[in-house]
Each structure stands twice: as C-alpha cells, then as structure tokens.
Image (cartoon, rainbow, N blue to C red; front, side):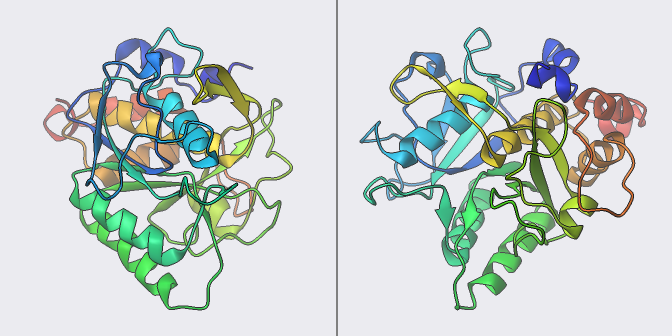
Length: 292
C-alpha cells in the first residue's frame, strides 16, 4: 500500500501543505540544501556552530539527514512523500560528517543538548530519527530532563523506536511524553528489525518503514527501510494538524493522534497512525478551543 494512504495522510495533505508558523525541529544529519526538491523551503539552522548544509554529500550523515527532511519538506510533486513542505524547518545536525561511516546515533548528552537548543529555537514538533549509544555517564538523566522541558514548553517529541529487533526500548522511548515510532512492513505488521516494548506499545505509533523513497543527497532517489523513515510520517502528520488547528494545544493534538490510531491492548506493538481520523477528532472540539 502507498505509505501516505496507509497512515491516513492523503485527505489531510489535500487540505493543507502546512503553515510557515508551524516549526518542525529536525535533529539529524545536515542536509543537501542545494537539492532542487528542497528549493524555496523555509529551512533555518540554530547556530553557525552546527551548519545545516552538508559539506560532503557522500557522508552518511548528509545522506541520512537529506532522506529524512525529504519526507517532510520536499516539493509535493517530488518522489518523496513531501508531507508538510510549507512548514518552517529548524535543522540541528547531530551526526558528524567527519567520522567515517557514522550512522544515525548519538549519546544521551549530545541528544539532550540538541533537544534543549531546538526547543529554545522555537520548534513545536521534534523529529528524532536517531539511535542512542549506550554510555555510563549520567547523560540519561539530562536526556530525561530535556524531554520533560520540551513537554513543559508544549513541544511534541517524535522518536524512531530503533532497528535492533529487540524488545525493551530505550531511555528515550520510555519517556511518557515521547511518541516512539515503529516501522511497519508492506503488510502493516511491524518490520522484523523494529524495536518493540511495553512503553512503545503504550505510547507509540506505527508508520510505514519498508523501502520508503525520499531524496538522495546526490540528487537521485533513495529508498531506505527502518524506523528513521517511519518517524517523519508521524512528525509530518502532527505538523499538518497544528497547521489546520493552530489554537490546539500540544496535549490535544497528541491525544487526538493517540486515540484515533485504534485500540491499545497493553501489548508491545503500537497501532498504526491514522492522521485523517485524528483530524476528524480535532474538528469536533469547540472552535474557540481548537480552530484557527
């Protein structure tokens, strides 16, 4: 099935391309800003210490960052899903282009700092397509505090569940404010490599993550599988809902998305995102509370 159809995004994408006032923080690799399908996008970087643009389009960090931003911000007529291209994107690179073969991983300390910077930079939704590297520092406490800070500021946090094929989750996906995202295969079942767990089943969502096609940093289409590609479907849906309902609170939008996804039976597998059902749920709220 078409991934856009699988998560109920088709009708919502017909209603809106997103609003510039909705700021999506993307904590990932730098992006190939010269890509033609990203031309004209509202892309900002937090500081000159972490440039948003790649200096090496062949680096793993650049490839990953460009792939993820393409799902969210590419032109609507591109090969990428291009969910919310009219939103504003705040790019906070966290993967190094210098480290050879560096994948989408981060220490808790690094991720905590990036979350704080991006929240303070004005983001309303965060996309974390990142894997946590185990450490023996007290960085987990700082990460927990950073996510709690995002919650206090009303910033929704979407995180890839992970691709180890394990049951249990991480310090990030166990935080009750985080929306962990599991990758589904073509049949709608959890992909074999996706991490699952009690907190993921309780607070998470599932989205397409098998052979997702988006932007390649070299200008050619790129297809990848995993939770890194699944998370932006949830992030993009949240951005479109905030665009349609600018007076809605973060809790209202999160509740609508969670409730509309379907029943949760206390297991380790979350239900599939249903963006259109979430839209219909929010549309039933009093206009003074939710509508723009």
